[in-house]
Length: 88
Image (cartoon, rainbow, N blue to C red):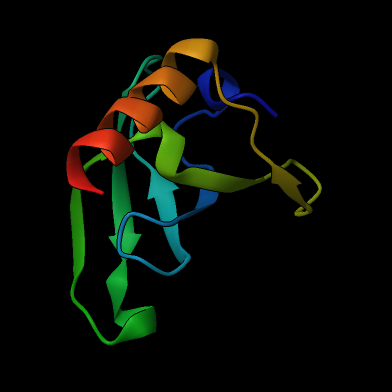
């Protein structure tokens, strides 16, 4: 599944908190950032709604409830590399 194909209401797993957590997609947009409802309480943090980088989305649940790996665009992969270079 591609990040740009993930629709509003889809459950995802993202790693922006450092460990995979469940989130629910809150928009139908495309690009490098997406709006999600993150369930941080799964790892002892707060639940919140906010923007995350698309490259932090690692799994998405399909119509059958199966978890699918997420395929990132070239632009999303390049942004991840830039961010890694800045902070590592």
